[in-house]
Length: 245
Ligand code: GLN
Image 1 (cartoon, rainbow, N blue to C red):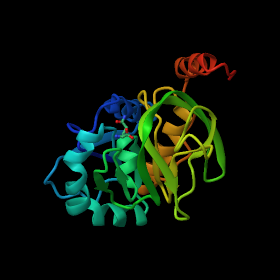
Image 2 (spheres, rainbow, N blue to C red):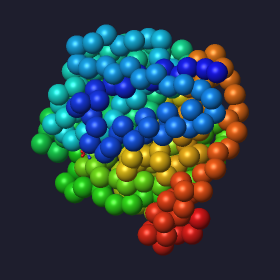
Image 3 (cartoon, rainbow, N blue to C red):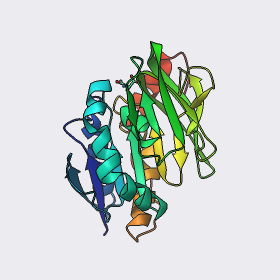
Image 4 (tube, protein in one colour):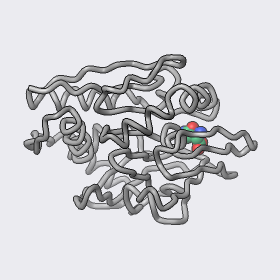
């Protein structure tokens, strides 16, 4: 039995899209395989613990991001880059995705510098990119379909240090034009998909957990669970987008 430690960054400030739901999915899927989850919540002013196996940065609106951006970059940025370079996993959703990159310039010109874990930069546009989204993702050569909901003004472009998480099947994705969604560098993932993200996407949840277990010194290939409910939920989302599973 392994204990996976998750560092949950700014649970009070960045939680707009039921981010705790993602952590509940991690807890459930680990427990079903006989493993344990420990969550360490990190607030503004706290030092970043360097021993966690997965770092989670949730979503927020511009004003929420503004509350944490300086703290993230100043107090935690260097360590976050180091732990990801050392093999730790990171999942950053929506506003968190923007701050995991080089930064976000809001439509009013306010610049919030990010930590540069992902080679991505974001500029706010005049319209919001809102709606259901489905992508064909690829992680370390393995493909899976991911569904979710997106709601962002930011248009994100990637540099050469990140690859997209996937290609948009239906929806806007990073910028509404490139056909790409999300960003991946090493085992850090940024994405605009929420809802929350993981309950309807067990494939992605298990890839992240396998990475986290590897970071915890217990590399395993996780046995499938009975995901009938999760897959049914994904099917409903796909049908709403006019897609079949
Ligand atoms: N502030 C960001 C944006 O609008 C994050 C998304 C959000 O608030 N939902 O691009």
